[in-house]
Amino acid sequence: MTWLSILPPLVAIIVVFWRKEVIVALLLAVFTSELLLTLQAPELSLGYAFIATLERIVSVFESPGNTRILVFSLLVGALLAYIRESGGVAAMVEGLLKRGMGKTKRSASLLTVFTGIFIFIESNLSVLTAGILSRGLFEKLGMSRARLAYLIDSTSAPICILILLNGWGAYVLGMLEQQELPGSSVVTLWSTIPFNFYALVTLVLVFYTAISTRVHGPMRRLEAQPQPTQDIPDHVPSNSKARYMVVPLVVMVGGMIAFMIGTGGGDITQGDGSKAVLYATALACLVAYLMLLLSKRETHQNLVSMGFKGMGELLPLVTIVLLSLALGSSLRELGTGIFLAGLVGDYLPLVLIAPMLFVAGALISFTTGTSWGTFAILIPIAAPLIIALDLPAPLLLAAVLGGGVFGDHCSPISDTTAVSSLASGCDLLEHVQTQLPYALVGGGITIVLYVVASFVMIG
Image 1 (cartoon, rainbow, N blue to C red):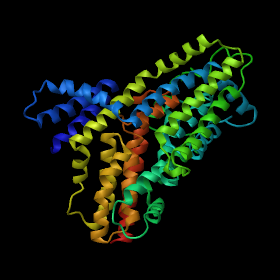
Image 2 (tube, rainbow, N blue to C red):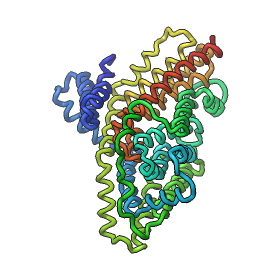
Image 3 (cartoon, rainbow, N blue to C red):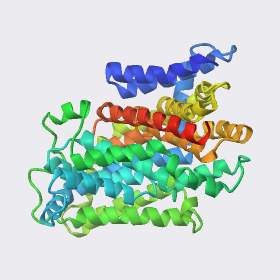
């Protein structure tokens, strides 16, 4: 399969921006991919592609990790409903304002960013916590949910790939140990940090946005419109307390750390992120439910109804996550990522290898919606180049890691993009359209930096 393998992601991206229908776009992309796979098997009729599409979606649940992500996404809806309906969000906003925190757009934005940085242990947990904490503040100050989605999304993945004391670091380290690179894999991995220009530039843009309070491009036009106020109800319960929001969040963050240590056999970097985030979110839901039940503010029946209503609100986003996972699986079998990686070429000048690895990583992650899948494809390609041509390993590996992060936080078919939209209450397509210009600016600066660094270190 050659250039045809890029048709499915192209179909998804074109339909998303043309018809504004993400679910339809993903369904068509999965069907296109399965149709191409069917064409490779002469014994199958073209009609089989329809059945194969359904089976591909069902096969998502064969992976426990995928199923945990989907269940986690539903539980987030229940947790958000409990926190919102308890009045905890409104009480928390008032409490922060009384203490002089979050009174201005700058302080509210910086609070959001530093919350995302502090919770570097898992990207989904980072965006979820920062999003829930800040939604009410952003609404109070008239800032758009798209701005919030951008801040939490563009903080989480770059921080996770820079700090590395998490599942991201463990995953990449495991891949490096399979290669035959000179020196210690741990030292090589940590040495990538100063060369991970995309993550660093993205964080600079995030802090610029937070400190200056300025937004540009589609986001600026969006903020000129009236903003929704769903999370701060008109009638806040008189006995509402901030603890109805704070305690479940603390339980979720603390539980995540504890479960990461537990699933990692005492080593947090070896923990299972999908298990930890599911267990922690379920525990937070239980705590929020018990707090409302024991306060006698709500009956069991009302709380169950409230939880399912919250899940129902997020069902479209959960469907997007499901279809994104199905598309990623289908594209891996089709070989889309490997084809795009081959575009890097075998005859590039040495000083262009790092920039082109970043570009290849950005293309793969954007069109497949997965950073970890991008790492799995490109690290085995970068490692032989490093060894055969005696190139600086930290520079080339950082280019791969940065390229993977690019698509992970701005691709319309990325599950991380969907979770960021979920956490901020922002429409998915709105989030993609407003964040993409920032990502492209960061990507352009990154390419220039890799060219300069390559001339200094190689040329």
